[in-house]
Length: 316
Image (cartoon, rainbow, N blue to C red; front, side):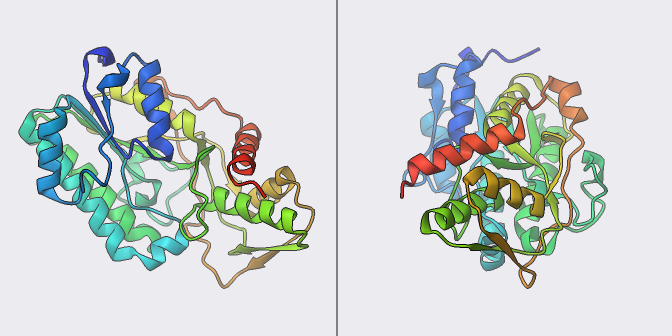
């Protein structure tokens, strides 16, 4: 039976972030009370510190936790912060799940990462392939830390009966994304480069890698809808992919974003920079079967909305 969200006190870690804001809005659309959606801020609670996590549970008294908070970035940020990304993501999940058990939490939703999949996973990625190899090296510390939380939730379900579920969203994009050039992912990074190049009248933009790698992208509002559907209706040990089921090469993506951004110049590919995982595209059948999720946003329209948001948020 689906949970009645109107009866729950819901902590959304990372609820003030890119995905978290959309999840909070989707929870309200799904029946949750606005005053019962609780967003612990980093300045109030350091979730890598167990005493702070215990304090958060004691003060906020949630019946459900949606754990979205993460320390994460693109290829460059992962290469510069492997130790920090492993520790912070492992520690947050470890403490939050343990205290979910100790407090008798009704539902714990862990948002994982597509970086947990092996580097050479057959396409489309099926959840059964999650353990068939080591993740791509540049983001392996982050991916392994997040994947360990799947094992923890499965073990806690088996031993303690904790209703904890694990979701694997593919790369997200949309309005409100992180456009910081030091830590952004590929879509916001490319949007910023092309818009700034157009504004500056430049005739060329440098792009990392060879362009041969492929990615799948999920519009952030679609992802939020999938998370809330799962929070309401899914209770099982198996991880579930959240994606759109379509793949595009980085070269084609860059060309598309350049055109949509109005940039008329050329693209200079820096093949000395890493491509990351060779391909990413998900099998999305399990989410449809278990809780009826299917992405709705058409990719070009999603990109246009994201570019429009950036143009307004970062005017020339």
